[in-house]
Length: 304
Ligand code: PA5
Image (cartoon, rainbow, N blue to C red; front, side, top):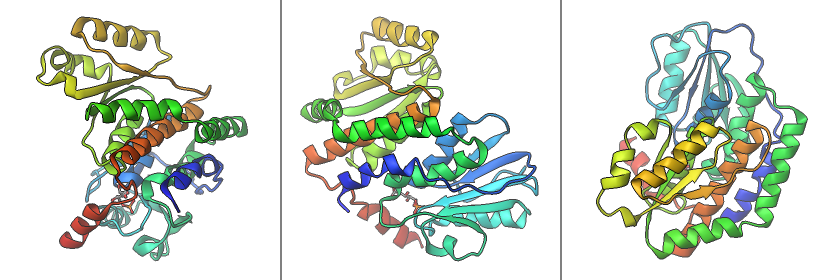
């Protein structure tokens, strides 16, 4: 499937209704890397009833025990860090689940939600995240409908995103993405989409934390005109003020990224998709195949 067509499936992915059966638990650990790992990060910002730990490593935290709901997320089902974390969680007696399209993970015989194959992992962000959201948050049908509708609107018209990509491309600039809660992980998702789709290095951080570190280099760094700064608009007046004052006192212009939607759920997926389109268009302008992950695959082979 052509990459742009992959992107267009997100509006249906958010309707994916599968969930895990969970009983009493004290914490949630979600293991995954790259395009799969983002699922845990996105979920962790939407949910705060119990502790959530996102593992992007071979190992898991010491606190994992039989009261842990452990979810291994791997689109291919073959990612070694995720399989290693899962093995450790099983040894510790955690209640283990998996989200995958197949691979070794799909063959383990544990509680598994199978998702459609044939996409790039990062294009399957809805399939990978929805089972976790459905299990622990249960979004309302209205929220799901709203998300699907505004995603469809973006599919039909992404000229604004194309224009941003054109500005980045024209200056060969390095994208810098600033988010804020509850979309800190989405700023990171954009960074990874710039990396994997457009094959450019990018940087992300978030308010208000960045005011305690990035603020000085925003005034004094070298080669500032080589960066392209973007900041997600926020509904929190305190963050809006920070964005405004940061620009003024550092002499830096941020491209404001508007966010559509009423629920955090819809706003999250909308923002994810805005990043999808900017990075897709940048890849196109660079003449680069957004689906190509050959170097990642080569690296995986060499270390196996
Ligand atoms: O987007 C990608 O292709 C990568 O970031 C992969 O998601 C990452 O390498 C992990 O693989 P998987 O998603 O199959 O577990």
